[in-house]
Every structure is written in C-alpha cells, then in structure tokens.
Image (cartoon, rainbow, N blue to C red; front, side, top):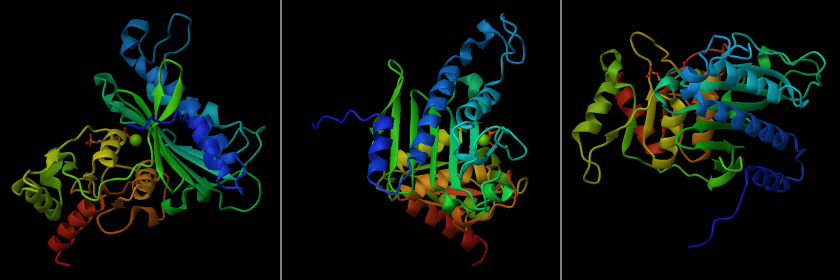
Length: 337
Ligand code: AHM
Ligand code: MG
C-alpha cells in the first residue's frame, strides 16, 4: 500500500496557492486563522463534560471569569481569531441578529465571513457530534469602507471558500474552494490537521436516508411517498437504512463519505423547515456540489437562491445526485406536475 503523504493543512493550503499564480495569499491566511480557531474550539468542546466539575455555564468560575456557554465561546473565539487580519469588510454569525462590523481600528478587507459557530449545540450535553460551519465571499459593495448587509446576502454560488469543522470521535476540518473537497483530521498529540480525506467524491447514489421522521405526519405527501418507497423496496438486495444524528454537520459529513440523502423539509408547522440558508445550507450545498452531489429545496438549486434576510430558513434536500433527483420527482408527482 502506498504510504500516505504527510500533508498538513498549512502545507496543503500553501501548495494549493502556488497552483494559482494570481492568488494574493489572503484566502490562505484566512483558512489558517480559521484552523487555529477550530483547534481552540475543539479543545473546549472536548472539555464540555467537565463543566459540572470545573464550573457551570453562566456561573463564575474560581478565578471569577464567567464560564461561557459553548456556542457563545465558539462565536467569540471566531471573532477574536478573524477580526484583525485586515481581510474582511463585514462578518455575520448565527449567534448574532445583525451583521458584525470590524473593530474601528482594524484595516478593512475585501472578503466577507459568515459562520455558524457551533451547530447542533443542543446535542452537547449528550456528547453527540457538533460542528462549526463557515462561508467566505468577496464583497460586492464598492469602495473600501465597512461592508453592509448586501455583502452578506449573496447567492451561495458566489462563495469563494466554504467548510466545516466536525467535533466528533475526532476533529475533522473539511473545506473546498469550489474544486476538490479536502478533509483533515486533527492529531491531538501535536495539534495539527493532517490530510485524511483527499479529493472527496460523494457516491452517485447511496443507501442511507437521514431525516427527522418524528415530523412524518406534518410532511408533504411526496416526501411521505418517497420514504415509504425507500422502506418498501430493495436496492441491490437491501432496503435503505435510516441514520439521523440531529447535527447537520455530522449528518452531512456521513452523507458526503457514504452517499445517500440528508433532508430537512418544510412541513405544515414550519413551511420553510428549520435550517438557515446563509449559515447552514449554502456552505453545505457548496461543499456537496464540489464533491459531485446535489442540493436543492426540493425544486430549485440552493446555491441560486438570493437570501432575503440573514436568518432566513429554507427546506433542504442534499446528498448523492440520484437520491436528491428521486425525492424531487416524488415531490413533483405528488403536486401533480
Ligand atoms: P441549531 O442551529 O439550533 O443548532 O439547530 C440546527 C440543528 C442542525 O444541526 C440539525 O440538522 C437540526 O438542528 C436538527 O433539528 P431537529 O431536532 O428538529 O431534527
Ligand atoms: Mg445552526
């Protein structure tokens, strides 16, 4: 067996940059800063189970500092790591209602950073995987002053880079600049991300469906028909398997590696589902498409939607191309198209 190259995330980013002579190195610097924030958050996530021993969240610890809730800690860590490089004109986080301006004394750059600092955080207490999701865009407003909401509400296909960090049985950093999806696993011994998933390609079809089936009776008819079809039939001799972690980063990561489909549909209670277009759906759609998969709201490509507001929600069907096409067909048939 050929020996795997000892490829660290910094080396991978720098070698990638050399392939693009026009690159200024800014995106590389941004990714390196993000990977540093990821290590800090990862360490803190791993300590989550010790909170009862070391201090409750919301209370003061022995040195008088307030013990922060992990999602707030992750949000603040990302801001601290990212707000001083001179690369961004504006940022926005799922943890904040509004856009976030750079501190007044910082240089304003040409990029926009959007992130969900700790997705799936309701799972923390049960030791279930959670993740950080990020998107980078170029500003669209002219000039070199502070960015605006308009810079943050761009359609997803305009992303320059998207990625996520999954804090699971190990910590994995996955990113794409649109061509090729790469995954790096954190070696906790020396604190470096090493290439573990080179050029990830999602299978054309999988055999796993992932959806919160507790909402079944609120679903549109086409989705009920689709799930019953997967359960009632055999595909290469076996029915589909159900897997639902309830953490989008973990569910999409598995889908990327094994194939199949992850869904958060709209239903009679929440017409637009639960997941957010800007912070969750766009970056995941960009990554899955770069790996050869498909991501739609059941009809239209996620990446072509123009966001109307920062926290807008959208139904999502994402994963292997053939699986997503099939659910779209069931949805359309049930609507009589
Ligand atoms: P959050 O942003 O409040 O953490 O919620 C998002 C999470 C996703 O990670 C996951 O896919 C979804 O909520 C699960 O929702 P549900 O519990 O309704 O199945
Ligand atoms: Mg979230």
